[in-house]
Each structure stands twice: as structure tokens, then as C-alpha cells.
Length: 357
Image (tube, rainbow, N blue to C red):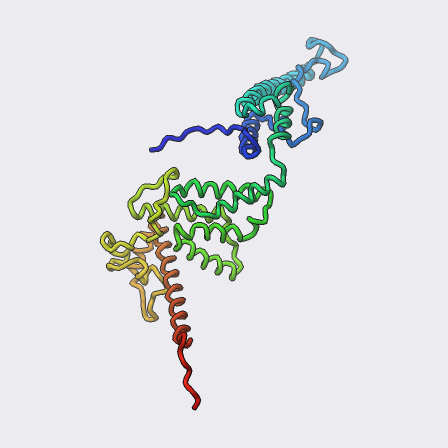
């Protein structure tokens, strides 16, 4: 079991601003003070942060200055006001403490270069505003930075650190969506991601390329990049589980594993769910496309198979993978057949056509 270490984001430059300010925002919202420190709000537009005052008898009746001079109804009203004051006072003290803690957090999580900009600041809002002016990248610079990061993500890592790479895909995609970069509009990021993983799992890529084309032809909604990354990650976990290999989000995917299904190894293969010794992709109960015109299922076997699949989510996913493999193989056979047919009809290179004389 790997140990998870707590990571503190330090503001060292413009590249750290986005993550750093998000952590500050989370801390401020937890203390219910973000509205008082948000650097995107000008100081004159900030809500007032004032300590609540204790209600006096005059707040109930301006003509009376002592509690004893109030009648029963006025005393009850004053009591309600003071109960409300206690709640407001308690919240004020909590927010004041949170503001103090935030000041400490800001200065503890910035580099020495930026520390002087927090001096002589009356409030955390003043500190954050000063830091934003000096550390936050401009909109144009941020766009260029994200475009470069996105293009870098499209290159499959040569080492085996695939999981961190997937997490980076999700992170960069999120940042690109925030500023509406053209690179992540419509279905473009789906094709970019599938192309980038084609070296790792060509079968997954081919299957989804076919599915996306079908979904587009039917007008169905396409999955977003988050869903595609999730599907790929789960696909890899499933493949590892089928090979009895442990998978951890902190481990790498095996580079030699090319997406083979669990029933590809004849030495360890178990009988199919239907009871016959063949691969799932060869079973007519599981694969619609290989059924002969006169084939009819045995109701008992069909019910037994469906029961096993519905009772086991992992088995259901594995069957889905086998069905996808069958579709890919069928498409490949058809493509090869069409290519062979075209080669037969095309005259061989250098062949001499018969003379008409």
C-alpha cells in the first residue's frame, strides 16, 4: 500500500496561480469569508464586515432606555433581537478568526519573492489583490500556456506513468474549458484523446472511433472527455483484473499489455458461460453478429447466462469488452476482404495489357 503525502501548493510564479488561488478560495469558503476577500471584486464593492451591536431597549421603543420600563411585549421583542444578536456575534467571531488564519495561510504558501507584497496590507483582500497583480498570468499568456499544455498532452508518454498522464488530461481539459479554448470545443478533444492512447490500447481506440461515428450518424449525444477518460481508465483496470494483476491509481499501466481480453489465453481459459469450450467472442449467446440465420437459443442457457452477467458488474464489463472486440474483428475482416477484392481487380504493377492485333 502506497503512502499518500499531503502536497502544499506554493505560489512561485504565474504557473502556480490557478491552483494556488483555488486552494485559497476553498479555505475562504470553508470559513464563509470568500465574499470579503475575493480579489476579482474591487475593494469598494466588498460587503461590509462589521461587528454586530447588542440591541438596547431603545431599539424596541425609542422612548425607553431601560429594560424595566418596557412592557411585556416589548421585553419579548428585545429578547428575540438579542437571541439573533448572539448568533450573529458567534458567526462574526468565527469569520474574524478565519480571516486571521487566511492571512497566515497566504504568507506561508508564497515564495519569498512575493512575500513583500503582502506587507502593510490591512486585509487578506488587499494581500490577494496585490499578489494577483504580480503573479496571475494575463489572459493571453494563460491561453498560450494552456494551448502548449494541451498539445503536450496529445503525446503519449514514453515511460509507463500513464495514470498521472490521464489526471493531467482531465486537469488541462478543465482549464481549457474555463477559458473556452477552440482546442476543446465539440468532439475535437475526444478524437485527440483517442489518438493519443492508440499506442497504448489500439483496440479501445478503434472501437470508440467506430462508436462515435455511429453516434454522430444517429444524432446521439457524444460522451465528454471526462467520461472517455473514465471509460479508458476502467477498461485498463478491468484488463488488469482479468489477468489477476493489481491496479493502483499510483501505479503504471503495463506497456506490453495491448488490451487483450481475458479469454485470449487458451491455457488459462475457462469454459464459456454457455458451457462450451470456446472464447466469448465465438459464443452466439453473447455475440449477435456471429449468429447463423437458423440459430435458436436454449431458453434455460440464455436465462442462466443473463443471471450471471446481471449479478456481476465486472463480468458484465468483460462481456461488453468481448462484444466490442467482435465488432472490431468483423470490421477488420470486411476491410481486408474489400482490399483483397480491389487488389484482384487492379492490374498488377508492370503487367502488359494484351495487344489488339
